[in-house]
Length: 412
Image (cartoon, rainbow, N blue to C red; front, side, top):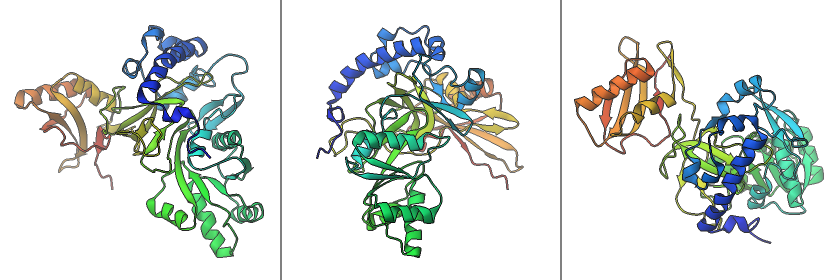
């Protein structure tokens, strides 16, 4: 029984980059052909020149936070999905509302790879507690499980006692869903003396897996790994038995960028997850998820060689309102671009002694002096349209948490 889904997972770095050099220009050309939004956005881009991650990083970012408005203007998918006949098999709705397409190819959401890493194999019975209605999560798991040769019980959520009766009768050995619902099932099973001992492995997502909860599952003999997926992109990354970060799926390219920009950050620095897919039906190019993470160095001890990220580390959308005006991370980035001496900045918002809003832009720099402080303050006034104090700080002194705007005000 192979530990890896296929040979793509163990490619050398050079092999993967050679593949990207061919796949990126082909996908960008395809996106311009089939998706009206990308035809316009990338009209001035020569796909043949986008043969590396560095070249890709020069293209504009499309933000998930803008999808609702885009889809209202150009229903149902904002012009981002293929318009070719037969490209779309199902349509889902996520909160927003945001409408998400599903194509007709097997395992369209690419879940089989991550489920294989979690130990799911042909002949398993997968107890799928993700919903099959409105959102695509249930179908994501269903497609991946069936591609692996697993049977699926489409349980959905809720109805705890009925769920326990089904588990006792069918004796599934694999669970997929949120960790909180698995915990509810196990605790209720203890209470009513229901047999759930058949469960031996789980893949969980959609919320944080706390160490104590994972240990509870492990103590019951349920090996538990995590997945990271979205309704727009499908599987993005997954845990392997090594449990050293989340391994990026082979069907996407992940960048970590400074929030509010499209600029990649150095390895280890927390930033926003931006994803490019190689999906022909929904060819998202540099799609900003709004989630924070950081790149881990090296490869996983499990032998998979793709990029690893630390996991979900919060949200990148840090827009706030100060003195009646919105202040965005992109504005902070615009200020920093005007001053090459500044390598990193963080806008801290608090209240002064009179409970008035106050902004302090803390800037990492090797330079110093009142002239730089005054110049940065003038740029901040020009860009943000509000008075901002400036504090210069030594390189490496700001927290590595992905925050560009830190709102510390208390409103109680």
